Length: 262
Image (cartoon, rainbow, N blue to C red; front, side):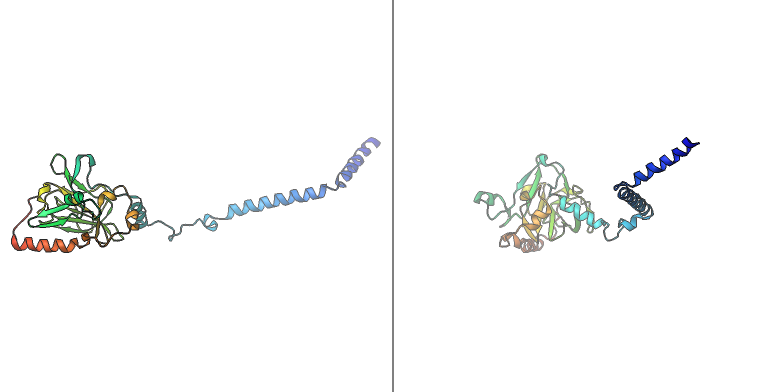
């Protein structure tokens, strides 16, 4: 019996000695605090919804279709208005006031007794046949006109005063108000009275605030590049609209029944 009584007493003594150590109680408190904190955070995470973390859908932050179009537009680069660049060539180049005399002469269009600088590039197929005319860049069609002098006209608006023009076309596939994608077919290359010497061709222009620029300088460049460029507004090309109107009036007065054979 005495040995059995001694065993409990010995255990109690060891426990007392253990708890008398100075580091025991701080360690116990720290461990207990860590456990309580862990349990608290776990319960909060379980109870909290995604909205409480600020992940709820916010209509103001959602990208609209227009935003997506703006992003797409800024990434696009001007392309040739044809499906196969290797199959075409420039018949009449853009008239550049800073070019050499020979280059300027090549860019003059001779119509009857008048001469006018070319405000775009006239593109022909190397085999002399017609070809598909496609959108150089995505945008909205804001003008479609039957015009025998210019060979019919399509104008596409790209925003911020920038537009592309397609003349000397036939079999037009788009209407005013249509939203077109880059590379979408617009028409077929045709003819014009203005530049009959070019034969079957299409006249292509890029304009900023109605000022024509050389398309060859902007192919493979973004819309933002042209937006940032400062243009020379003193160029004679800026008066091309008035020249066209005057030329058209003269044609209508002298040959009112002239129609381009598409």
